[in-house]
Amino acid sequence: MQSQKEIENWLRENKITEVECLVPDMTGNARGKFIPAKKFLKEDSRLPEGILAQTVTGEFSDDYWDLLGTIDGDMLLEPDASTARSVPWANESTGQIIHDCYTKDGKPHPFSTRAVLKHILGLYKKEGLQPVIAPEMEFYLVEKNTNPDMVLKPPLGRSGRPETARQSYSIDAANEFEPFVEDMYAYGELMGLDIDTLIHESGAAQLEVNFIHGDPLNLADQVFTFKRMVREVALKHDIYATFMAKPMASEPGSAKHIHQSILSAADGSNIFATADGNYSQAFYHYLGGLQKYTPFVMSFFAPNVNSYRRFTREVSAPINLHWGFDNRTTGLRVPDANPKNYRIENRFPGADVNPYLSIAATLACGYLGMKNKIEPSAAYEGNAYEEELALPRTLEEALRGLQEDRDVFELFGEKFIQLYTSIKLVEFEEFNQVISSWEREHLLLNV
Image 1 (cartoon, one colour):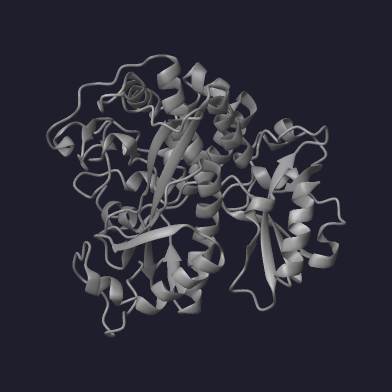
Image 2 (cartoon, rainbow, N blue to C red; image 1 turned 90 degrees about the vertical axis):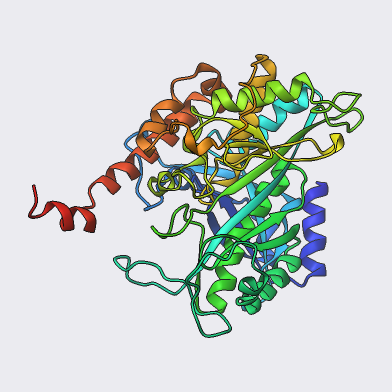
């Protein structure tokens, strides 16, 4: 096999002695095993399929045995040669390779989130279309915090002082963390990540990194790798990096905005533009699909109980389904661009998303909009924060929506939606068992 030969050459040329065999789990984090490089190509790689069915706390859903059978069997793994990367933080010469998951009869595993994205991309390919995306990743740097009852604090910068005020786009504020940023870019280059610009966001010690636009699967793999890499760089500097959607009550949340356009596979033209430079019907139908179906897939854009704290007024996060031209108060923004670069920015996903599911979800909404010729509302021209909040307020509410639309149900698969819903409901119920300090403070002696 050509891919096997590519991997063999890569291992030899980079003097790799150990390989991280990686699989993205339901949360978008890395599961897998270490294999000596000498044995990597000789082994029939397998992992228990149960790793795809765990909650963020490591528990299993009530539907686990029904959906995965009663033996907790293995799934087969196939390495993707295009994802081979060095691991710059490892003590020895280590490589990482992302693997696709298959059932024992050779079919893509229905619970693999990478397989879900590949399925959605396959639908576009059948239509002669090629989606192009560009993710923007926001995250916070915080002091090390080993006590979950303590609030998070910004770390000290080069000046020896923590940030205490809004520093949007500040060059000097970003330079406070120059040693971290330099290592982040150095690691990113070694790992072949298409990292573009960096800015200081509006939160204290909040940064945003933009990726160069490209193939959705490739960029999902890059975001999967990037989040892991950034945490490692932060640890090197004795701090934490967090992709929580809302890590601090007094600071804005962190998002993963997704810019997206659709090209014709035949000639590479952007189907969002007409020949005379106007926005096309496909553009409006894609927008209409995002407006109509986003409520049903919101749990892919906001997958954790903490995610819904981000959707509040006036803090750079959307609260309703409006769209507008260069309007950052709307959930769907159409940036200023020439016709070749017409695109839509989906501002709903948080930084805490599974990159494969969030990209699959936004592309699925647009696909259904074009297939069903859904017209969007008129472009919103004012401040959308003045309108009513029209998004789910809890993970439980969003999960109910995931099962309410037949088109979404069929695109993602009944079993996948059943498993995803049951996993996230376990997390919601676990969270509900925790009594907060607010409840003790205000209800203990007052009700």
